[in-house]
Image (cartoon, helix red, strand yellow):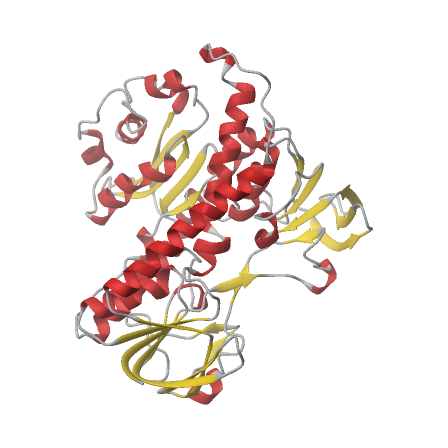
Length: 466
């Protein structure tokens, strides 16, 4: 079968690329190694983790906050089996949605492992062992990523686990040791902390979510600490052992002395690696660098004409929405359009509670570049809406150019931060100043008023409500 465009991988980048290509009139195919579409994000990442985050937050509120709202109930009990069943239902509904979109857009779906025979021919190894070959004028590699595991960590999928297994536990850990306090570790650690587990974070860097603005990491640690979590920063893990009913983690502490921590589960969240295993890139002539596919900065075309790559397999942040934007860009590039992506304005989000969201540059980045800047901050505890809902943890931080007042970065920790960051992205896309944001009317009472107040604070320090 001959296609105009074939996408290998059906995650957010892959299926969006296929839909956009089909919309533009191209005969399109998509290849997925698993029996369901959606990739890591939908099946063992973004969507199931958010389902558990919401369920665990409902439980935590029932046990800790209902009484103060005048809601009297018997002590709630976690039904983990039902919680996991609900999560599964959410995933299945989303799977069905993508299947519908493939049919709607007349995209041919192949289930099997795709690999290059040459730059225009792809072999599909199916579950029953049979092979089918298709040819394609253009190919988009969208195979995503897998969790990084180091050999000494003795990953066994039982007691020593990654995010994939953490989303399918059959019991609440008594003591969950989380290696890595980045985005994934923070989210899943907070899930089980809210369900009653003792959680200990072991992080090589000096704070939680170390790639984000330092203020965000400090504030998130304060909130997660309220769940009873412990933290070991500047700590290097050297060994993880499954001792049967417990796990032992050995590390070099911040003071250089050895540390041993024991729990019943160890969740390893030290990052992810590009997944290009078995693609047979050599047959097509595609080159990689440190495991990632090398692409043109503007078109995302590889060194082989007609083969493109998007998402986690290329440079940049491993984010579903980045992959989606890149999928659209490649499809439109193939059709002859001239799209672009401003990578500085791809937001990052941590779905803990409070949520963390960020766009643009951090204060640390501005300092390292020698940029003159000013800071405006506003705390959620001074917001009427946050006080009414009881969500007073957090703040909004706006960084603006000291001379021009152009907004250079916005960092939010607080209730609904994941949704709030969109205003900052929009403002920065149009190169707004802090005063531009400050002069926009924001409805009262809302969480978004914190953005206006932080903009006022960045503009001659004139916030109203603090």
